[in-house]
Image 1 (cartoon, rainbow, N blue to C red):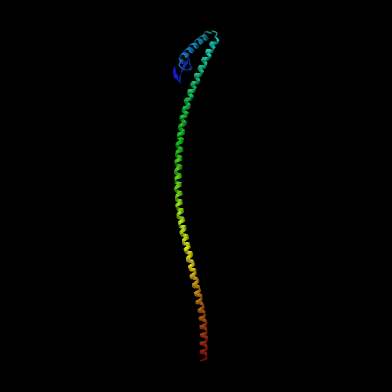
Image 2 (image 1 turned 45 degrees about the vertical axis):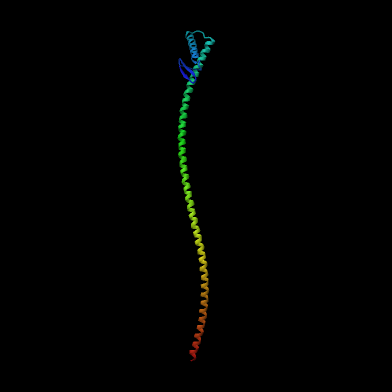
Length: 185
């Protein structure tokens, strides 16, 4: 006889009975004796009364309940084992998820560093573009001054050319006059 969950489990001829409460032992003993008495009548070949059949039926029910309870205990044990395995798998999965999250965080950190570097490079590019724009502006201004100087020089050259042309005309006239003077003498 063994105590189990507030009641007593009894085994009789391979039959298990579970009776809850403090009366379990007394009820079991009474039922066991009654079932043994009925089994004895069956062996002797005597006719069974309704009460005898009821006791056998009650014994059978209690035996089946014992078997059901034993099966339930076995199933509870399996459920506990499965729950332990599930908890273990869940813990392993959670660890893997944590590892993946750490890797994601590392990648996120690396991307942030890359974006920061891109921002720095873009700022430097903007500074260089600004310097290029300033240089281009200075070149435009220098080109304007050069164009102005070229215009002045071109005008002066044109004036000089006109004076040279006038001088050549004058020299040609002097030459003609000199030739006429030489011929006249």
